Length: 275
Ligand code: PGA
Image (cartoon, rainbow, N blue to C red; front, top):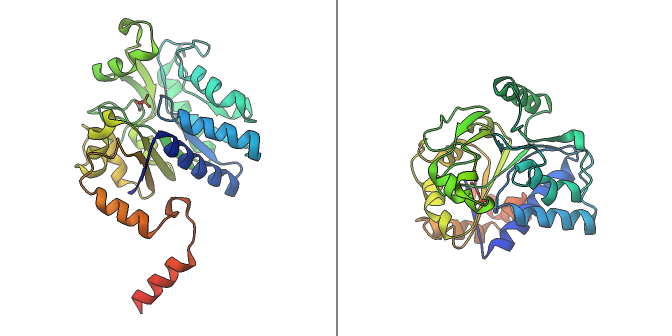
């Protein structure tokens, strides 16, 4: 995994936006997997700025969101659909028919989940998946003990997640108990994955995900099996990483790697060492 530590939350958002923009510039009809929550807000603000000021084009982009609360309608201000509309979709030139967010109110969840999986495949698969991480190590709503091969389905939220997310609701009792979520297996099929994390509260989960054993107790640890994951962390979220010196060393030796910048200097050095 590529681990890149930035000074603060704002720089994580800007770095993530540069990677998304680069993806869209090289593939204007890219399929993006998107996340909700506090973590990706900075990324979305930067993407909106890039759209307004630099003409970043979303006209052919297709998006699939990771999850939605069961029981909340699209227009409920606490739904993830509403979050996405307010924080990204209504500010950029994305076509409404290219937006997919799991439905929290379908009358047939089983059929809906199968359809959602099919739509991802029919759209060509996810090119770039954006992820946050829960304080319990979850990705999307794949709570501890989720199968690492799981697909889109209904999950019962962990108490820790309900408490973490209560800040978006008036009362703890209002937080839905169930969510519809892409599975770990679904996520692992994305071509490239960006994991974002900030703040000390995430530090133990980040360390377990990147450096711990692969385990369903920390579903983010399954990302270790994916060939193309970039973790963008702020200093606080990175504070419990034991190999932090190595990550900084790599970052210093290969700046711009996350942007796939090809560096003649780097190539020359490798050639020199191999000769
Ligand atoms: P947060 O949630 O970005 O609001 O911290 C992350 C998550 O639960 O995946």
